[in-house]
Length: 350
Image (cartoon, rainbow, N blue to C red; front, side):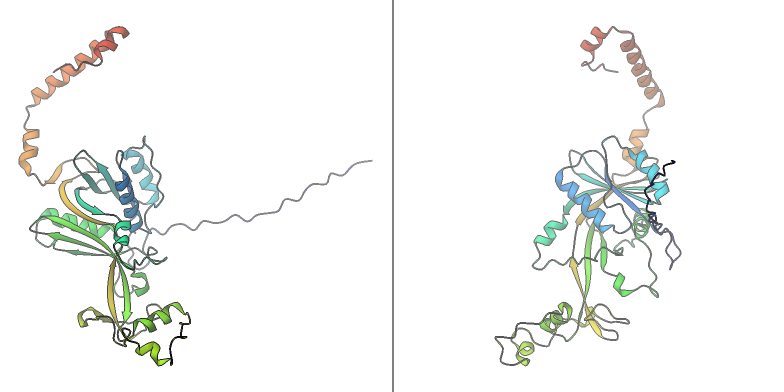
């Protein structure tokens, strides 16, 4: 008799469709800028943490868990940047004297090189605050950017302004939602010291004329402890928790067009508060290159005389040095291996 094989039924699993990343803003119609934050050469521990803070600040349009290897060079990142729609590189490096930050536009530049004079990590700023505030949805939307002190008319400052403005997505004031405005990046240029102050804050609104106890009660939806009070009115009128708001100034208050959270209702006045999140940096613009980490130097802090001296070397001297170098390499190739080992540690002059 013929035997029938009992085939096992294979369950059909519906494949998960990955939603494609949005490359164009549906409101403004502009291309959404994306960034890579990585390091050049090896960094100490504090600068690695600064790199992580910068990646977090650039969220959500950045690679938070970007993996780097020692053999990766700039061309590797550039090859990946095209298909992923990456428009900017933020590169950290460390020399013997001080750390540097390079901000470049892909794929053809320009590149701005900043010397990091001072910096503070987000952890240090949080430890210095009495009540650090980092909500879970703080990094859901990109931050706003405010530039101050760059309107001096100098060409290198104009280019710096355009570069910083294009790092973050543009917003439309008429259609932007208040709930998406959670963070702000303030960049200030000091004309006297020629230094750039870089700050990162979180934005919070507090209703004017509401006590802190009532505000916390509405936000947390928790029943307060009233066992020690004789009446409910004591909860509001207790000393130190009056109905007046905490030092609200008329200049720092705004009238909301739409509701913002549970406490701030529409058509009411709210006080705008800024709380620093970090990182904090003090930058000095060193030079601007025309290409991606290469090309003609458009601006230099040391002046054109420094680069004129470099390029003023006669061409014949450069050619003679190259001939001597090639001659030395040819001699080393013709030498036996034993002789090469002895002469490898000797530096031959030009």
